[in-house]
Length: 198
Image: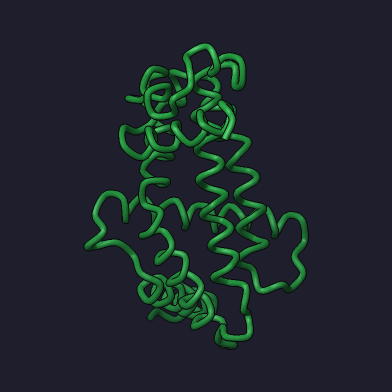
């Protein structure tokens, strides 16, 4: 690998081991075997390098998720069961990529101190919302407004579930519990519209 790739690999290693806020440029240099000047030459700033490392790690997770959801033929036809199966796979993948999510939450906490981080995550959030609709929606047509709303919903759900798994995995949501919640909320909405209580 060249210095650029070495730096990216070293930055990912540091993110997983130290987190975003505690990683220094010298940490990355030590992990990568590159030199300090090469960070500025290839990435401009340490933050830009760490952002690139987060994006690459997240993209690896997305590619694995695409593979896990590629065979739609084995997904149940029932919408709730389909939802459960899909989110079970999402959570299983998360468990293998836990350091990625820990690093992202750590990076987000720096948004008020590092302007690059705020800009990076603002753009990444929009891309993620569109990507989640492509990955998780059943393919039926959505209006632009509905697509944006569904993307925001999926992103909020994903972020919340991942936070639960980072903080307290023993009591975090599962595909089964999310499906039960969706079923209950939908049933409550039907009763609310009809004027009856659950």
